[in-house]
Length: 304
Image: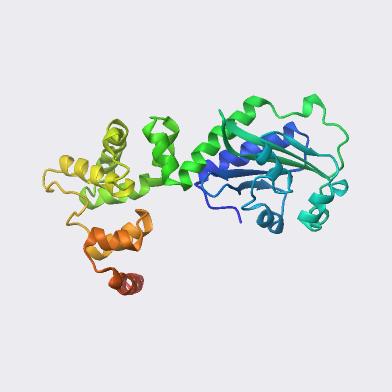
């Protein structure tokens, strides 16, 4: 299955993929992100292919017999003019190509400088004897896809996001806003119920994050609570009736914090135990109790 992305990023990826298919006069296509930590390709956009094939192309390693595996491994374009004549590929796909109905594939590695970021592949229903020049995907278009894949990597990997932010790359702030704006906004609303005021505070919060990111210590800090602290500080400054607070603000219960950190803060259970000064061997029990409380409250709200 293709992983869930924000609507904006998904729309951009699908649009770029459709344009690439049109440039190649192809019938189907797929975009894969290269995970540098796992050294595998992950499907993030596709058109015209079925779930069985997507599963096969998820977590593909460099130099895998598939065209995308060869392309990312060798760092150059790979064209299979007729899949039925490629024994290694036929064996690797186990008849999937015939079931989907494609006979030719072109896979292009996507790069930003020397860094491999993914692969774009187009599929043809008929064997291709020769790809004409006017069927080539322009380099400018491949560059657009590569730059967008850097954003996608930052969306899934906090380390990639922090890297972009540290370089003051505007794509990092775009991903940060796309991923965390709604969460920070809900925190600000704890302090400032007026929506227009809360939106202003949210703008100031992201400006402060951008301007002060050099103070973020990746070894000592975690990104989410660091941002929440900034958001609540700005909210407190806007609302004189509200006392200045840090991440341990009085507007949220310890129980809510536990679930909040686990779901949105990228915290492990070990991190939770240290942050909230809770014995590690009781974390599972407390989490289970708090989730049950939330369920009961949800049911009560529904009855009301």
